Image (cartoon, rainbow, N blue to C red):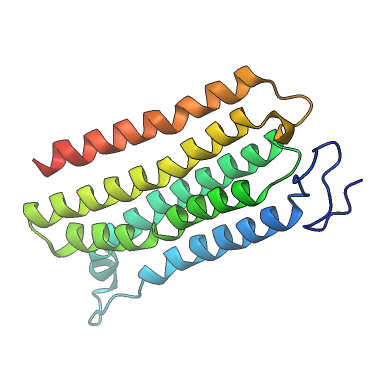
Length: 191
């Protein structure tokens, strides 16, 4: 008997499992704000008469960082949406882990801006630091996804009727791969 409000028991979810509607709405709002904030680093370049094209080209690193980060946040939103399809509801612990995921998402605009700045105005050392920062932020973002899938695996009462243990186990491996790859990227560039 799900009423679509947090605090109501999710249909078939058992004790402590509540409807995830508010969690999904809040998360979608955070994703929308973050993806919107990315555009704030785009600016109209200063230019003299006849120099607009050159000014726009000079902003290329900011455009690149925006596009990469927009796609990255978009993929994270799609993944988050898919995760919520795996569960029938939420618990206080699941919601807390979700906040960890959202924390990882909201930090993306900062390393994206640093990377754009290093591409535009920095030297090789600055670029290296910016890439390490971006890789660290991405690795930090992968950790709560791993915790979330492990939690869902250990709490079968949260899973939707059509989701089995093996599906969750396969999903649990994905953030581990992300942690390793982002960590290796950061370490290899940082050395």
